[in-house]
Amino acid sequence: VVEAIDAEIPLAVIITEGIAVHDSAAFWAYAQAKGNKTRLIGPNCPGLITPGQSNAGIIPGDITKPGRIGLVSKSGTLTYQMMYELRDLGFSSAVGIGGDPVIGTTHIDALAAFEADPDTDLIVMI
View (cartoon, rainbow, N blue to C red):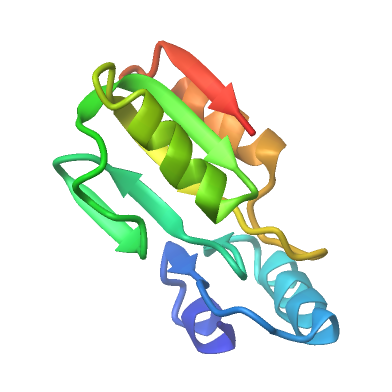
């Protein structure tokens, strides 16, 4: 994560479970100190997907189709379930932000991104 921040990679998806809270807090603070040029998703998350376009993480690509709903969730399992339940409506994007005590992108951050997205008409927050 620190190397991604140093390289100013715009997005780091951290699916890894079991990262020590101290370590997560350290790389979160490091990203802040470096100007938040790297958006952190996770840790302990399924990642994010824009159906039919891109998938960064471990979200199954075949459980939904493109649509106009944005989804943000702390739970990987509930992310998959909601995508499946609303598969006929489809999703603009879905992001699992991770359930650890210290995460990079929060519900508020994701809601703001969906609010600014012209391809998202509705938002589901879990």
